[in-house]
Length: 569
Image (cartoon, rainbow, N blue to C red; front, side):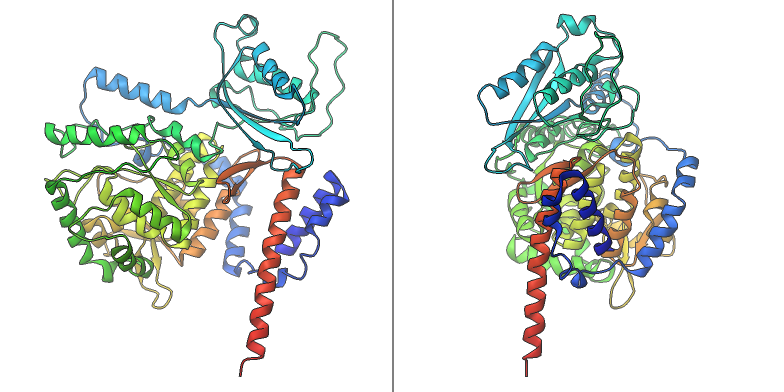
């Protein structure tokens, strides 16, 4: 599988950027025998699912947006509350367009690009720069990323047909930048998109121009009809105030709804989360005796089920958290110390959040190995129940499993698949997240016994017992099936999916994500913690070169290991 893929990459690069790029994928042959091959069961799963893909897509009736991540139990509220919630949801769904273009290292190059934006009435909301991924040190080409919006009072834009909007203005800007020699990528918000057209790759020839001399010049560009998504860690700052539900405000059926002291305390904690920006230390919460007592009850009761109901991976990591981070019944750990430990284990970090994010925002964060975590705790009157994520759920459920590489990879695959995905595919991914990361079961590798690995189970004393009883239905993990399942959010689940292992669960989810409709691929650079859109041959060449370096290092290490074994007595 890997050797075939490398041949395809080599042929593509040779055709698109010449023999120089092809040289970057040479010398792979010696390393490929050491790479793992996809298990036969996974290959059969892939073939069966891909053959049925078109039929499933034609027959799917996409249901309403994920109820657990995009809604909460219904409750009576004032008209003002309802209006504010609608405003928040609409605001959360409005994302700026992003223009990514290259600028050569010559005087006036950036000014020409900015003039093109100004001439079309495009305002820059945020701008960032860095060396272009495919640039060499000799030409010092830079990549500029700008979040933009359309100026309402710009005369030329106002006079344009309404259908053009921001997308039309950016198309004109892209044409101008391409004429200046720039490579351009445009990510347009769904509300600004024109009817879907075939995406043209950079460098593809265009149809002959019309005879009308006044017609605009069309030049090669890469415009992706996809929702905006973050490309750098700092872009996650835009999620801070886009909480949909809970946080400082509570629904009427929440246990703390009628407790003004509890509500005030939550408002204080969520304000700290709203002020947090990338690069800052995570806010510290001085938990009260009452809050610590609530934590103690949940911690102690869950500990009684740890050996009999939870995954061996969870049982392995928990003593490390107790020893290294100070987990215990008498102290609620701070997010910063847990985040530091996660970074050392799997490269993941925590980030404070006011409350429930939209499915898109939350899943997008996972692509950067960032988990948005609440800091407030459930109401003391119901220490073993919460209708929403709280610090008990985050630290006793998610944090331990994110220390495990297999679970961390499963979360990362879902996150990467969500970048630029359609609303329909976001809903499908959110359901896969629900039935795996939140409420997943898996078989133990040695005994074959079914145990819980989902955070929603690991942090719920009642449902942890329920999930392993004979009451609920259990099915073999299948993301194609899970993506279509409805589920309740105010009662125990009637259905759980059982994975053969976390590694097989991740592989099946990766196969599923490849069937989602997205006009481009993305790659996460763990060193710079950035996401790159793979829409140019030069980017693929650079990525392939990096892969060659890592695979060669692996090959040398395995050869040394074999040599050591041969000389062992």
